[in-house]
View (cartoon, rainbow, N blue to C red):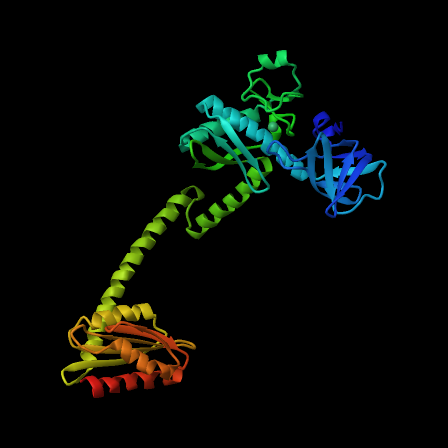
Length: 400
Ligand SMILES: [Zn+2]
C-alpha cells in the first residue's frame, strides 16, 4: 500500500518519492509513487494538483488502494523525483472541509439538522441539511457558534479506533467504511468519520460565512464560504456597498434602504411616464384626426414618421380609428428600413390587408394583417411616400 503522506503530516507541500509504476491510457500517463502527499479525489473533496519533477499533474485518483497521478507526458526519471503540491488549492480545500465539519456540527447541535450532502468545487461549497426551512435568525445563530469554534482555535485530532473505542465515540454520523475507520475529532465538539484533509487547528479555517440557502425536497441546501474564500467574497461585497453608498451619497450601512427608496421612486416615475405618454398619444391622435382630409364623408390620414417606434404608432392609430369615419396610412423611416401601418374605423368597408399587399411590393415589402389593420416593412425607403400615396389613390378610386 502506498504511503499517504497527507495523513502523516497534512502540511507536506513538497516531498521526494520514487515512481513504481506508469500506465498509459488514451495518451495520458497514470503514475504511481511509493509515497505521496497528493490527495486523490474522494469524500466530497477534489483532488490535489501540482508537479512531479517537470510533469504537470492534471488529476489524482485512488483505485484498488493505489493512488494514480495523471500527467500528459511520461516521466523521464523514476528515482528520487521531486513532488510539489499546489498548496493554495489544497489549503483552500482544507479550510472549506473543516469548515463544513464545524458547520454541520452546529446545524445538528442547534436545530437537529442532519447533513445529508456535501459538495466542494472551485466555485462553491454547499451542505444539504435535513431542515424544512431556515430563517435568517437561525442562520445567524449557526454562523455565530461556528465562528466561536474557529476563534477558540480547537485542536483537530485524527483517530483510527478499534471497534471497542469506536462504540464509545459520540459520532455525528456512522462511518461509510468498515475497515481503517478514520475519525476526525474537533476537540470534543464533533466526531465525524472522514478521509479528507483538515488543518490541525480550527483557527486556520478563518471566518465561516453562510452565503445563501434554498429549499430542496425535505432539506435545505446551504452555500457557505470559509477562510480565503470568505475574504474574497468580502472584497467584492465591500466594494459594491462602497460604490452604492458613494453613488447615492449615503452611509454604507444605509445602502440597502437607499437602493429600495430609489427603486420605489423609479417605479413611480415609470407609472407617471406611462400616464403622460398616454395623455400625449390622446392629444396627438386628436390633432391628427382633426388635420386629416375629408373625401366623400370619409377622412383620410396619410402621415410619414422618422424613427418612431412601430408599437407606439399602433397605439396611436388604434386611438385615431376609434373614430367612426377614418382611414389611417402611416409610413415610418428607420435607418435602412421602411415600415407601413394601415388601419381603418370598423364602420368603413375597405380590406386593409388586401390594400397593403397591393402596394407592399413598391417598397420591396412583406407583411399583412386582417381586413381592419395591416402592417409590415421593406427595404426601399425611397419609395415609401409613393407607396402611401398609391394606397390613398386606390382608396379614392375604388372604394369611395
Ligand atoms: Zn473531513
